[in-house]
Length: 339
Image (cartoon, rainbow, N blue to C red; front, side, top):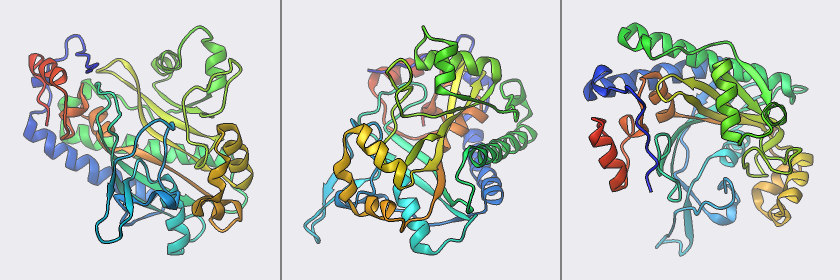
């Protein structure tokens, strides 16, 4: 069922029209990717839309989402549409011979058929996925924070270019380049009687740009802040990047990223997640025996970033997807044009 909320005083026609929106989306995608590649020293590569289940390369996200699968006539096998490229990217860095301090980026397109539809979520996911090899001796929190700062600067510069082209957006857009870093345990200590989403909103409303760290492991309360697969991010060296969204008046997640598991972290997290059998999969063996490089990486939502920088209230204003009847009715009544 749709959970679409129309913000008070949101008037779509006061922003960009549908044609201008398409032009602006193109500008954002071109300029942001240029900044990201330069700041993180990335090379654009081609990525798969689907992988085989037995490769161990697909991401199981929170462990409950069902991947879209289909049979292949010629091979007699099965393929799964990727849910993210977190594992594939690390393997690609190894296979393509990338050097320390350099990385790759690519377009990631996924189908998440179990996703609940609301202002920020659809069954179609489009991201800039990136991954880079960590220089020797830098697999630590300081390197993670410096990388986050570069990504935020790329977003900040893109926002300035958008406002320069469309000055009317300046009243909706105020991207702060000043990042506040906080752990999930610190958030729980600050707001012990609040839910994780409520904590994010309260913190981001005050700090505007926030990187919330250490996601996946259980907190002092016995519950994790949010779910993370145990076999790509190191739960002690990861996080989500949020901006305060002036239109929706909420914390707005743009990116999930982190330093990836080494052999020690993978063993510990597979055990905590109760899925130690994955250690026998090809990808996992390459992490455990040290074949794959130590990397950092993440995904940056393309539609999410366009939505934020263009002052849109619904992701369907910047992304062509399929919507339930209630979502379409609510948006039509509010004058929101879904692509």
